[in-house]
Length: 215
Image (cartoon, rainbow, N blue to C red; front, top):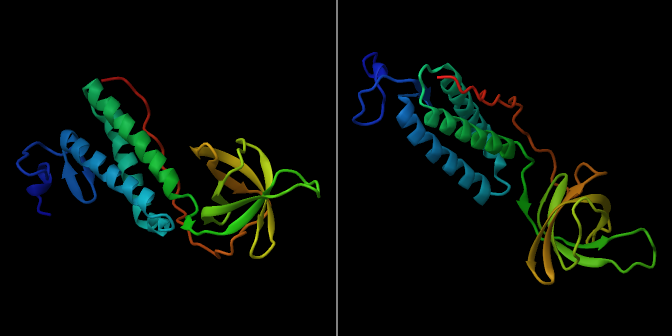
């Protein structure tokens, strides 16, 4: 980038001086606020449509971290910034922070494993059959006909290995009158599904911008 180009926004046809830099390109505030939502949307699509591919977080997290940092600097350090622009920066930063948190979650893998759910430890209890929709090292989402409750602690047993884990219900989605998809957190085992070691980014969570309302 030449020195002359660095003195103006890189948006085609814009001659305004840059207020920030994002992914190696200088932008004025208005055009940064054009670019940022599109980038956030593409990252959200990537995280939503590619379960098990969160190893891409090594490239996603630096982008989100930079975005949050730039938004913080703009929201708190730009004089006479219009309140509407400040609010938009703060809102986008909150979205970026949520996506950053999602990108740091253990990756999930689409995998159907036949299991049984046991509500209590009574030996005469009839176990409820279920199957996983996806799994991760410390959890799973399962499809079941059993109307479980959030925070309920149950035993999950694999039919293929007989292995059992103590789990907690973290969310429930009702699909039909008799079908539920349930998110489970595994409480007593590190790798119930035999996924193996997964390298995660060790980047620190970036700070959110201050909600300073001064112009």
